[in-house]
Length: 366
Image (cartoon, rainbow, N blue to C red):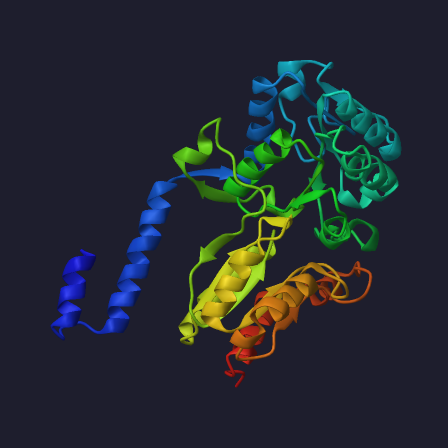
């Protein structure tokens, strides 16, 4: 069909813009057809853990209420019944204690998947995550591997206040020895969690509570038990030529909606889903910026010393001469998260913020 349309365009019977729109519609339809089945992020995470536990007897799960209650967010649903209490451990409310036990088990060659009810509680265990897990391989001259996954919801949810709404992406991504992943879709969740469990090094796996119940198209390939996504590789969710929007986790959905609004005004936005915060896919980011000559970064975390700041630094260092406009950074407000719903919304990036920043970068602010 595209060949016929292309020939009509050459003959002058079809506008080039119509051809581009038709091509985009066909490619989109083809992509959706390839993933006609749908899966929630919750089910994607659950199935990934289940399959990895089935494939490797060294994999086990531990955390608060992961067993009999089946997880605070039901990510571990059915695992206790299937694998028993020797591989699905309900722990006391002591993050420092069970995280230390998990790291010790990883030293001994097991593969723990440690759940934090929220990553805000990981601060109780941060000594074990950084000083015990992240540094051991280096300090042992490569003799000790620590194959452990720390997973749970990260960042803002809804109405849970300052102490339960913080994004820890920048915190953990600054630590050598850790790998930090942040899935957006069901395919991300399945492929990245499987990669994290199979990895020989400690992985911080940052989920989003508000995405657990969202359904996404998922391909047959992603449903295969051998499916695995590479750590350190971003995904271009939407191609564009006028501005690059780089983000991760829940903000990917916001960026895609902003791109739709921008398209209505004739601005073609490329949206990059980082997937991996550390290692960071600098090559994909810089290649996109060299194509579009503009950069907008989006994150829910605090603006100072954030993930977006690191991305902007990378682009300035490697692609400065390609930029046609100053880089734009969108982040959460530089305040503890308010409890009131109206103030909470003001403290977090919104779709309209991404649209405005992208238009500024394209000198289309009016």
